[in-house]
Length: 209
Image 1: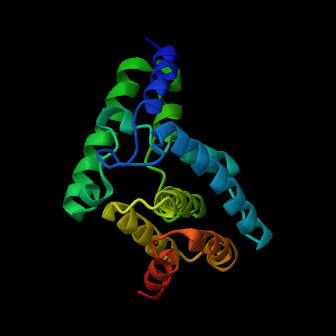
Image 2: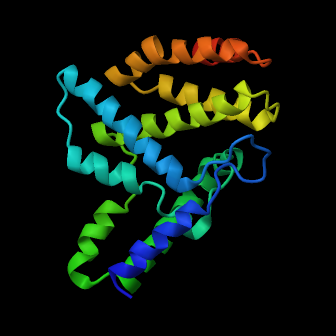
Image 3: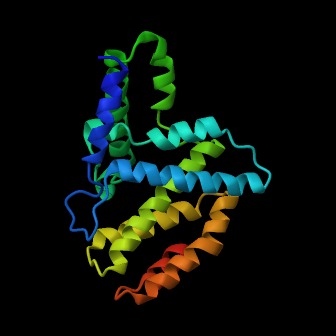
């Protein structure tokens, strides 16, 4: 019982594989994904600050490091399934949030419950920190899909994942998004020219859609 249970549960995130059910040259766990999202978000937030924005770093670290904790209870749902409809996505989120709330109520000492409710909440919203989380999360989706496409993985789901993530990123109006599209993505695409899959064509189509 107590916070020990929370700490112990974090190991479960190491066992949950992202994009389940599809062949991968390199599998990634949810915990690996969460760590990378924090790293992306730090740099994205630095870019925002360099352009005059004020970042709530405490909030940013809380929501980025814990944004997928709820997958301990429901696993990683395939992206096409998860986003099949707004109703289904809302239902999955409701189940996930309900199980997190139950876990906090059941295991976390009363004096820490408000902190855990804040830290383990759904962090993606219209705040600067919430939008940075959204961009960072989708950036890792881009990089995961890119790594598979670059190795010649012809699973259609990775093309969909790559394209969908780019479209989502492009639609978020932040300085760090402009920087990603102008300075980071071109380097990634150039690296992808060695792939048998037309990553440049997929990228250009996604950005022009």
